[in-house]
Image (cartoon, rainbow, N blue to C red; front, top):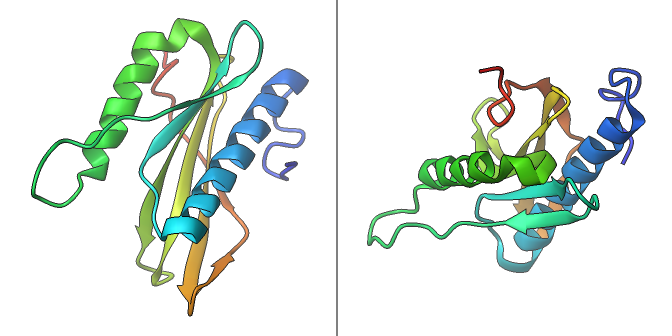
Amino acid sequence: MADPELNGEVEDDQVQEDLNALVGTALGVAQEQLEAVGAFLPAALAVQKEDGELRMIAVSPEDSDEELDADAMIGDLYTVLLEQRDQYRAVAVFSDVHLPEEQTDGIHVVTEHSAGVCIGAVQPYSELDGEWTFADPQWESGDPRIWAED
């Protein structure tokens, strides 16, 4: 998945390939879950340092009768990624977000590379009569959390 936001912005081809793979895979996984079950839980992907393989990381929601706390799950994902960051060269966290200005929802992906690059994407989506529509992603800069300067 090539995207105009990253093309030319990242000097290292490997960094760009890693981030493109993370964004493309995260959007694909979320889209598949939406089409299959109408929802998806926050999750993460990581590019392993040793072999470049993608690994999916998930956490369980807290046992509660209350509504699912996606923010807590995202926090738990970042905790796991921080603890394991020496095993990875790049990570992505993706979640479902509400987009009030567009009056729809979106897939939010934040990618971060150990080389210091952090970029995000929001892909608005909608469902009408069982048909899912996914708009083009909107690109945004991100703030590093895993490889933030100490």
